[in-house]
Image 1 (cartoon, rainbow, N blue to C red):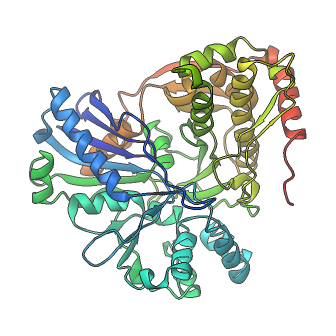
Image 2 (image 1 turned 90 degrees about the vertical axis):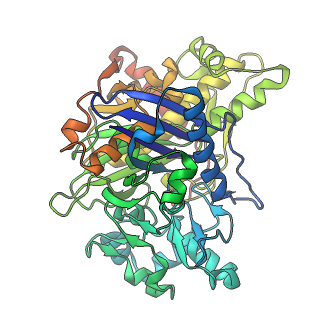
Amino acid sequence: MIFLGLDIGSSSTKLAVIDGATGRTLAAVSYPETELEISSPQTGFAEQDPDTWWDCVKQGLAKIDATTDVDLKQVDAVGISYQMHGLVLVDEQQQVLRPSIIWCDSRAVPYGEAARKALGDDYCFDHLLNSPGNFTAAKLRWVQESEPELFARVHKAMLPGDFIAMRLSGEITTTPSGLSEGTFWDYLDRAPAAQLLAHWGMPAELLPTLVPNIGEQSLVSDAVAAELGLKSGVKISYRAGDQPNNAFSLNVLQAGEVAATAGTSGVIYGVTDNNAADRQSRVNTFVHVTDTEAERRNGVLVCVNGTGRLYSWLRQMLATGGEVSYPLLNDLAAKVAVGSEGLVFHPFGNGAERIYQNQNLGAHIRNIDFNRHGLGHMVRAAQEGIVFALNQGFDVLKSLGGSCEVIKVAKGNMFLSNVFAQTFANTTQAAIEMYDTDGAAGAARGAALGSGYYANAGEAFAGLECINVIEPNRAQADEYQAAYQAWQDQLPFVNE
């Protein structure tokens, strides 16, 4: 049997098909080839049309059919990974009512903060494990307050992965992990957060029907299966936000294990078996995809928005005289010494940053010396700045019980840069284990596990092998610590 994984990102949609018997990837495509547009009608706003994501799924499947030998009629189950924290609203006819307010949108911060103050820290951090902050629930509150006529037409409020599942099946469902990332989940009651909804005067019926994170959730409808070239009866059996899914893809399932990724945003994600909460909201806790009634599994997430997005912006700015590739940028960075000769880059230019209590600080480049600094210094300072920002959150994660010895990553995105990978290892002082996988392949494994093809996670990850280990260079520890300290000393003003 073969299994399909969909990874719905804000830049593109990735699709993978795996062979269940071997775990081998049979097809891997991305659509579109260029990055999707993010609309920003006002400062701090970030929106996308959900139907664009659905079109990417359809075009990606057509690409698999046209360019590979994979027979989509053999797909037995589908798994879905998706960009976290987005809000999708539909009416009773399942028509989208407005563009999705996506993860890097900052407009809901005041609404989440007002709810925290009204409900109190004890409720928020004992029941929600988070402040409502800038998450999906607060975005829904913004719509309720700012677009009341539209809000009155809302039938269901969903996350991006719920929307794709709806387009596939015609059923509107969600998961505990999904609800938790929106602060719609009560960890003590292990149920939707009724008190938060009541505080805002929102009917509980706005939330979709609850289904398991891993397990049969619904079936692809016959009409959609025919349109997509799938057989009848294909199961939807796995769903997770991109960061829990990245951890799952790397076989990070047990308490104490840690994963990281450096895509559009950068994340360190540590699994715990307790209801850990940071009352300063610098890091956030969500239900991990492997959580069950018998075994509690939560994920503590460190996030820096301006990661691959910063690197993409830098490449665009430097490409005035022609195409500039990421490998070229990586080569430029490798020619510059640790610390970038004093040049400092603070990468906070992609919306409100959680590790700074949802403040929108903006990006800053400091200490430019026209006689010493060139493009290589700029590129290396950007890579170092991203790692240093993530390490601030990693320190918080460790204080909540996260491991500090090994971090698992996929071979891709910014970890393709030797400078970035070594800076990450040297700054965190953790060994970096690299695996040849990605979110789409992980979602496909999840689909196989959820459909019952694999009896357990051990079977699902039997073929996953470590392809490289980057150990911290102890001889350079003092250099990196000095560079990190200099970066911290020059941070823009942050409110206490």
